[in-house]
Length: 499
Image (cartoon, rainbow, N blue to C red; front, top):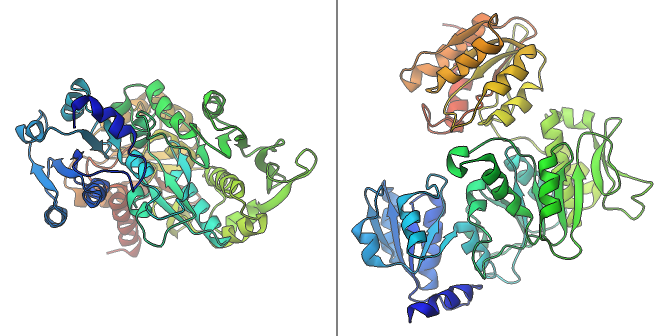
């Protein structure tokens, strides 16, 4: 095919049944989502080269089985294997590959289109017909909880639905599931959203969508809060039914106001205050829907109560907000209010999300290792009155100073962990010079949490909560936030059980 025919061909690849044969595709990375892309493209008949810096033995073996090629080596410059392959298209899946990655810069300079895994999944979403509707969820915090809640409500109402995307199951795996689905609830990170709606033929059109909140995060990837916000705002583009936004976060409202949506799409607000018409909110401890009923001007539907959510461990304010957002998404798809209510009675949060580890001598120990940025940590801190805060890790270019300043009134002490300790310690020196602040010296991973727990126990008194809410990523000393949380919980149990 002549080179000038390629843009037209790529724009026309909008179905599983399109002609993908002999398309030369470079897949960057060898993570779970990257392998899913390679597997999909190979099945479609494309020629696939996977380029990765590290080798995953099982996936490497499977690439050979499906007929894809693999290059493993240094990608700080474009390797000869990539240039010789001469790809028609590059597919990227990981936040580890920033837009200024050498391979991606080379692709942009040479005019090679770049797709994300989400765009590829959207283009081939009709593998099992009829294609599932997509309900898309993003935000700085609360994405996974909202995705799981929404999917649970849909399933309870008889909808064939699945959570997927950044939650851990690649969208392509859900798209290719032979049983098919009516709806996919897709968690989208800012990394993934950065690459969507950039190419002709690959524009997403969700059924409903939400950006839960916006705060500084991943600035090392996006370069500025403006670019980060721009990526998040893409979740609303071409939405068909409901653009759900956070009334307490004006940035999300502005995203909806600026979004180019399908005719008939509604703006649905959620918040912890009283709802207006077309909103979800809370009145006298009752969670209400004033959006999806005929008489929304003067009436409301009761969904559940804060007391019922408390019994299910869902009463922290930021979790209540997630419940409201998920309820709005589910109701937009026709889930009855009573099904929303019944689902919430049995739903439980993921591990490492404000998870109670133990309570002893009047001290509560809580694992919120999933609070990987200041916004999430602040929401967690606000759930407790007197906190010994275990904080720190890999800050990813985010300034923690304002969080420390705002949190001082509720702190009984702090234990600082992580490699980026100095900015955290300096913030405490500025804003809380009299607060008891202890630090875990850098060392082996195995000793970080036992030492942090030992120091926290010295600072905590009856009525305090020792809260692991790091406000930072975990990869400096741990495999991931789950590893960090599990080590914290184990250290707490071992400390409380004594020698």
